[in-house]
Length: 164
Length: 164
Image 1: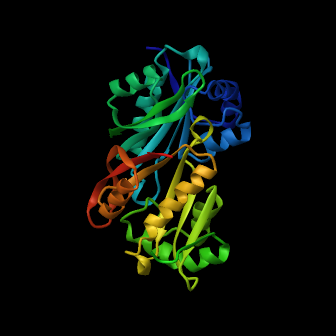
Image 2 (image 1 turned 45 degrees about the horizontal axis):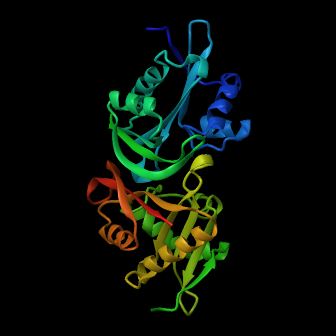
Image 3 (image 1 turned 135 degrees about the vertical axis):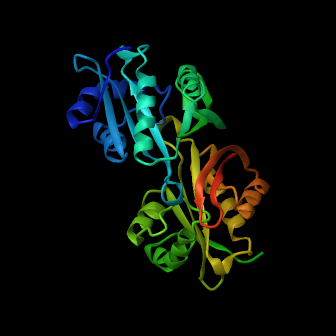
């Protein structure tokens, strides 16, 4: 197990991670985010709008990944939260996504959320789908062709859910 | 068939419909919107954020209902749209929701959307679920207990989808 350190994201962290963020959304393989989103809009999306945003760093302080946590809906739907996770390309395969998802579930429980929902897990993202399933999430819905994948064209997205 | 007239919503229309909007969200039976949302926040949610918002009026100019239309996701997900519909209590049972849904599908096609998705149709809202099904929408997912219904407690929500 690597020494992962979780801290609330700072603006400096966001600026450091921004090239990785750009790379992930430009690939158009995992996120329904504008591929040419501006840094300001990305900051609003990932940092200002959510309830909380964390970064995970290695022992040298390098940013391995980041996640946000927010209510998935308002009012009578605000007991279910939603998270998004990004892992820097150079940090893949080290268990960063798993560590972030586990950390986010603990944070969600502490904030009083009863469940976590992912709204659009791209079905061709086998690694993510399998990881979320191992961590206890179930596919509770599949939307046909809801994601225009850069390589595969229109692919399905899954709604995934876990009670906390 | 009543004489329904569809027009883009004006700010005056919004102010006229506001008491009906308040009544619908305060009931906490159908919408995941804060039950005590302010008028300004409601205006942003229903009018500013969406791509377009319509009202449907009767022959005397009375507002029977309103709907918004927007992309359900950004970037590689922006070919699927999302709509929300509200019918004034006094106008229920007149086919207003059906007329709005049909109108919104035509608008969505004209705006280039390929499909329409509802993210959280409250499962106990039998009238709506049955109507959307009659209009060609399929339940493609069900999220357990994702809505705190004012009368029934935690109830499931459906993801519903139709290719356009």
